[in-house]
Image (tube, rainbow, N blue to C red; front, side):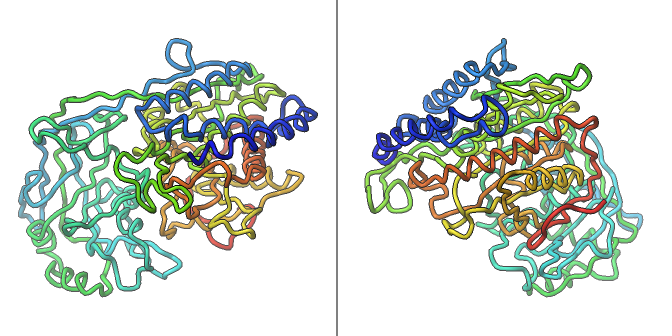
Amino acid sequence: MRARRFLVPTLVLIALVAGLGAQSARGGVNSIQVGPLMEWLTFLSSDELQGRATYTEGLGTAATYIAERLKEWGVKPVGDGGTYFQTVKVLGVRNISRSSVTVEVGGQSRTFKDGEGITLPRNQGGKRTIAAAVVFAGYGLQLPASKIDDYAVIDPKAKVVVWLGSQGPATVPDGSFRLLGARSRQALEKGAVAAIGPTPPPGGGRGGRGGPGRGGAAPAGDPETAPHFTTVQRYDAPVAPSATAQDAFFEFLFSGSDVKYAELKARADKREPLPAFAVQNAKITFNIDPDYSIVRTQLTKNVVGLVEGTDPKLKDTYVAYGAHYDHSGYVEGLPRPGRGATPSDPNDRIYNGADDDGSGTVAIMAIARAFAQGPKPKRSLLFVWHAGEERGLLGSRYNADYPVVPLEKMVAQLNMDMVGRNRDDKAEESNTVYVVGSDRISTELHNINEDANAALPKPLTIDYEMNDPADPQSIYTRSDHYSYASKGIPIVFYFTGLHPDYHQVSDTVDKIVFDKIQRVAQLAFETGRRVANLDHAPDRDNKGPRVGKGWKGKIQK
């Protein structure tokens, strides 16, 4: 099939380029060369690995291949039992919920059981009680480019945030379904203790790859025994509630307000502007009381390795690099155009995943080798090839809750996902890399990345368009870095953009721009090297997203 069609000429080219690369320095940034990248990716994206789907032999073959290279280079194993593998336990969980929500308005109270007027997610976290005052955030949106800011006159911190309007206002940009679906999460990121939105209409609530929830929906099966959700995280840890409610709940909540629910609902249905205000004399209490039982366990594995730092005091702190090495497998049903078929090969069934995320996989392989062969920085470098990103960030979420090194010792995480093509295959994008999230937790890390790029012999053009909070694709939440950012760890996400072959069988190695992987890897190497040699961890000022489309350069503190 497609990957093998290009195997012979590609290997010939590898041999030529690798010979030239052998003249470079043994380690360091100049050792990141095109030849090895081509060799590794040609194998990892070949039909032999059958698309590297989670829980398959193909993913296991990829894991073994990466581990063998790490052993060759002298990268230290830090996985289970002194291996390069960290077992990821994917649990199927049932919850017979006893939770309830009590609303107090003007001296009157009403309790709604979970599933009766208000619905909590099946994964509710650990047992606890949360009580707070209430603010109404209108549509619950903050889109500066569209001049929409429902938080301009309210403070969500330590409050229960309520929002309405499943479709958003008429002024919301087209294609913003991801932003509309993320409103409760965004309220919690702004410091709310809980968020409540309307029950979505039938067929509503479109999702996306690698969303930010705590667990995926369970597969279909016997409703009496099938898991309600799957998760790799600690399902009994405290979680801020994110609920949906029906008319009866909102009618009581707004019964003491100057603006009643019927008026707010009518405006929202017409997509007219909504006010934002503190709901006077109102309090909401969540009584979280789940009853969990594990009904299924599945296993996959991250690949993990360490290059130890040189400083006696700093080597027990870590700069982490990450990429996901899984992809989407192959088409099991009938192939058709757009799904397991291309005009050039109507029988092609395998999602080779050369760019997604074979490119990031080989980029951090090159970085690991470059650090292992020296010179080594003061801090240690942790490398994690995450499994199950396509299933919902499984590997990174697991490592964020069950880390192979202490999470509090992780000073930064640098993630690469799809760094081997130009956005929409445009030639004018050949020098561009999209950087996401660098400013949100640590201004200092953002500036270090900018300085690292400027120091390269041929700096890349850094574009921050997809860091904008109004990014309709919500790229910030859709790859493994988000699992670490959610724990407060400063991150940088490197990405070179979507293209027509995204999640198609046509994402093959012949379309990869290898010198682009090389240059992005060199930037990530240099950024990590600088962080690893700092005498302090990058400051975590947590000022949120400030750089977006059109921004260039550093942020003045």
